[in-house]
Image 1 (cartoon, rainbow, N blue to C red):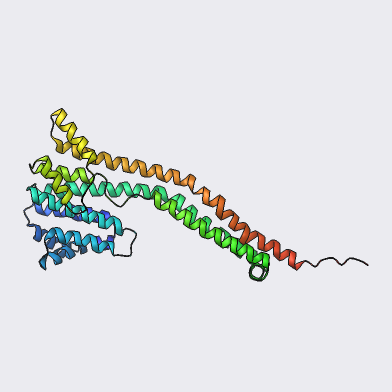
Image 2 (spheres, rainbow, N blue to C red):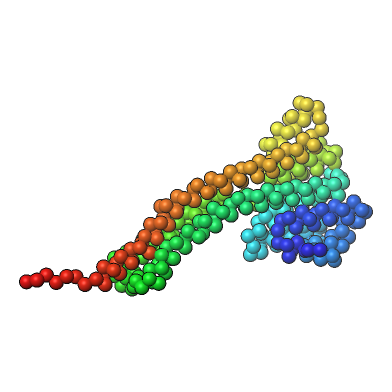
Amino acid sequence: MRSSGRQGRAAAVAETVLRLAVLLQAGAAPAAAWRHLGESGDADAAAVFARSAEGAPLVEAIEAQGASARRRNDPEAARLASAWRDVAAAWEVSTAVGAPLADSLRGMSHALRDAHESGDDVRVALAEPTGTARLMGWLPLFGLLIGGALGFDTVSVLFADPFGLACLGAGVALLVTARVWTGRLVRAAQPPPSTPGMTAELMAIALAGGVSIDRALGLVHEAPGGPRDTEDVDQVLALSRAAGVPAVELLRASAAHERHDARTSGRMRAARLGARILLPLGVCTLPAFLCLGVAPMMLSVITATPLPVLAE
């Protein structure tokens, strides 16, 4: 079995939770299920069991695993922390209302896997414009190297000639501006680390335990990661009361719809990024190429060409 620590992705959390659900459904006690997973090679499960063996409640041990993931120097850290926090919230709500823990974790596993696949779709769509922006960011420096390779004394011109120093300062300033501008565009287009539809999923778990709506809302707000926005959940509950149908399935359908919307909006952000990335390219990167690549070659030619001597 691959450990979730080695896999290093939020999908590994969904895999761990699904195996937990299978063990619990087969009759294993919660602590024993975590221990069996840890002994089978799941590093995250082993860490959770170690904390619980030291006396920490399982909910706190699970949430602490998310906190440790956030401390890792890894771009997936925020998503891993959010996934573990959601698992801790589902565990706490399910045990508080007496809902079947195995069924709750199985649903949570499917929600985490769906959210992770949606995020992967968005990140794949973002890869092309992001890679283009990074490649074009090196264009001015490539121009400088090409000038030197062609025999132009571009380095001396940039650091010795007053006009060269002005070009150097302008080019560096434009490069820094382009990188900052591009970085902000890319960060704005990234999918959020939180799991879409998690409030509806937790409400479905709480109501499956047979508690009242007010009690379920209170548990969801008090669970790890709370308080949460329940505006969409309130609309689903109102529909359930008006139609006279159970709210659990409506809530799970609403959570799935939120994840679908997150995938669609993420792809739209990636498509818009492909167009917006041209702004720092045209405004900053290409002028920086002129300042650092073309202008030094022209200045080198001018300084190396002797001026004609006028006949007396």
